Image (cartoon, helix red, strand yellow):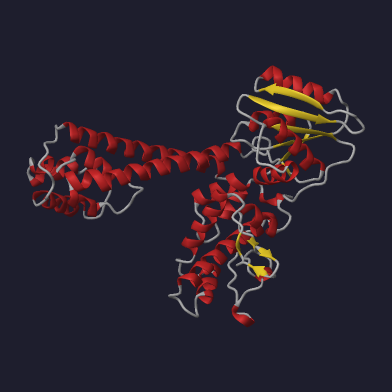
Length: 430
């Protein structure tokens, strides 16, 4: 469950304002006249002191903390292992509540601890889902590192495409047709400029580059075409030994290193999750491959903790929200208050699914845009609807523990599909 939970009336309430070096702690014991304040630095003895002080109360303890970067993780882990009920306070809700309670915008750590305590008291907190306790810490690290490496690889590729190739070998870019392949960068690293190719005869170049391009159909014709292209290149006449070309080779080596790192992460992910039932089921859904499945498991954890698919949609930020005041009613749109990375992963999976030949996502998209396929606003709404459908399908197959079974929705009166019918799974009612 992800909705706010009521606080037990007899529980000791502990509010922690988390920081990098120290944490402000405010403890409220029922029937006590005064609250207890503590400053706990982020060291093992200080964490032990806090746990011992809470255990000495010999009462149920509910701890509320605002997640701050990843600084809260070690302390939250210790509190969870000590058997305390740990809950998270939304940073946005904390800021709005602080402004309302104190009628001002000034902020300090002791004041935040008071506000956290107030929000715990009224139940405006959510259960803390510790990644280490629930066995998804390794999955999260693999997924986040893969994203970081992929972004760095893309940046290196953009530098090569927009700076180095236009100067030193513009025509060779047309031979690059796969960003996941290493052969193109291996060839560039060995032959970065046309003069390094034309210095050899055609036969000598083909022999030297034969092993670089790997297994390809019509490899000799490909290498011959590259040789002919180098002879008519408009590249700047820079010798291969120039410092500028040395810098070019450094960037190429960086791109190749990042490709190798990405491949290693994907191999480790396959070894870690190869027999994972949820990982296998997610890949049965159109548009979801190993990396998208890895990101979904890393960001959402165990989807069974969401009792209803609407809770999962809200967690993703795919729930609808409308701003209304008096006679004014704004447009209904996505709240985007949830997990941005999970929402982006589902969006990308939906984009892939609707480009496949036949599946329920493609059928729903076609029905949505049937009135006017060139209307950009209608297509945007259709993409959003397919993303929400992807989230519902993912939740349905994981929560139900069933394999994906394609179910093409039929047309309904009014041209829209009811929420209860816009899922795919094994049940006949999906």
